[in-house]
Image (cartoon, rainbow, N blue to C red; front, side):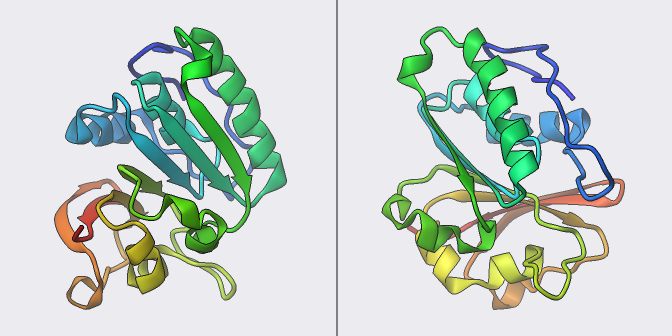
Length: 192
């Protein structure tokens, strides 16, 4: 896994070990970032962050502020190490605000309430088939509190092809979706 473009282009990132993590592949990541275009000065959240690759890509492309949310302490530590690598490639690391939140991404509206309505892009890659005590793609996009907090932001939601989002019953507007093998990337936006 590597940074595709920007200040840290070509930099290799560390990824968590084990089967519980599915890092976004370079092909899918490139398609996402091509779809979204400019990141200069953007405020970005990377939920269910894993290695932090999507937020790090946004930072490399000029995002002004990136917040990673990851509940696994080992993965949060890995994001810190990857962030340190990417920050060395930035022209002025002090001009970028970065935060790693060790917590449950499904509770982010409460954890960082001060960001309500101030976010440009939210990347979310929840567990594809959420367990009993986990939030998945369906739960996240049906959460009206989260949608209110994220108003005006584009939500880039990765989910399994066999997970049907209840698009008629959510507070989000579908912008587009695209399948990449077993992964689907759905772009959603709330009204301002």
